[in-house]
Amino acid sequence: MAEDNLFSAAAAERLAARSPLASRLRPQSLDDVVGQVALLGPDGPLRRLVDADRLSSVILWGPAGTGKTTLARLVATASSKNFVQLSAVNATVKDVREVIASAEERLGAHGRGTILFLDEVHRFNKAQQDALLPAVESGVLTLIGATTENPFFEVNAPLRSRSTLFRLQPLGEDDLAELVWRGLKAEAATADDEAVRYLAGRAAGDGRQVLTTLEVAVALAAARVDSDDDVSPHVGLADAESATDLKALRYGRDEHYDIVSAFIKSIRGSNPDAALYWLARMLSAGEDPRFIARRLVIAASEDIGLADHTSLLIANAAARAVEFVGLPEARINLAHATAHLAAAPKSNSAYRGLNLAMADVQELPAGEVPLHLRDGSYRGAKSLGHGDGYRYPHDYPEAYVDQEYLPTDVQNRRYFIPTTQGEERQISERMSSSTEEQA
Image 1 (spheres, rainbow, N blue to C red):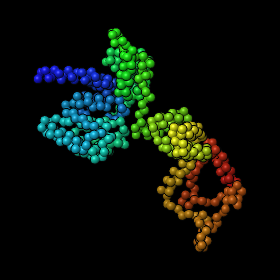
Image 2: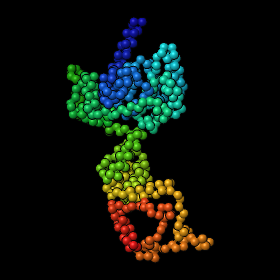
Image 3: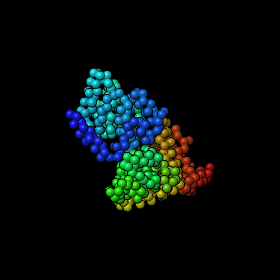
Image 4: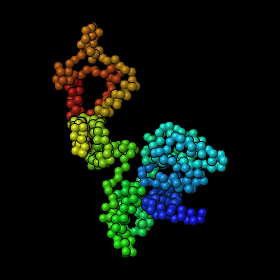
């Protein structure tokens, strides 16, 4: 028996030595965690709850490589509760019910609670999430859910309302550099400062990614070292550059909405540089170009409108090009439209006017169409007075005549108020001139 234990320990040690660097450097206590100071610092809410063993159900939300799984394990270590882990990718409702049954038995027989760590909780469908609700609500289970997706989109409201949400931030470059130095020590290697900074700068806030890339860089450096020499691998900038591929872009559902929001707001804010950057982010992440084109068509009318009549034409042409040409060439058409819309003068007068009119339609009585504007083309219309008193604008100078076009209840309301931006200045001047002539 002792011999079996000896061999088991040796096998475990050998497997640990061969495991990925990120696994070998997994923190053993909250003090070892790099980053997330707002949550885990001395006054951090998550740290205080864990130290007091008062943690209720939580959802850890953040990008990959920010420490969600690590935190869940550390919470379990610091707690007196039993720890059970499931992955929402392959767990079933039956698995959930078995965990709940075991938790109820454990609590009843030994008075010991259970922590269920559910990785990728956003993958659970409604039925699976609903199966958890009674146990979470009664306290039989303390749920720790981890997700890279916005829980407000992906987690059922009842389950989300019974959990405290903690958002983990991407690691800063200083945090990532600290991980690289720790990794170098674990690998018995050294590195140039510029190589460390390069690796930290290319990891997109992902601690696991920076350690994985470092492992490759160390292997490349070790390949240059003669195995007979007692020399530690030294990672230079060339090794770091060779170990990295194109920057891995996070682009889940949350990023999708945030980045397109930044894209539209950059166009609205007349910043072509920022607009083109966010366009590049979307294209690089594989965003559907038709979605981008639709947003450009909307922005052309919502934010530019009458200030530049060509913007809607160009946005529509770009949308047509996406269908006709396709990627990768259509990215040029999208860039053309993006730069034009961002640089164009801005006006939301038509959009704002519609909103004002819609509000009146909803809130005020639906007034009758004035008799002189009613359709007088069918038989019997004239006998009803339809069209009587209507003055044909083309019979007057400048094709304008002052007559009432609104129902009685909104006769004095103004919805379209042109600005002085771009081509809309001419509209404003023409409208003012026509009004003055009639006066």
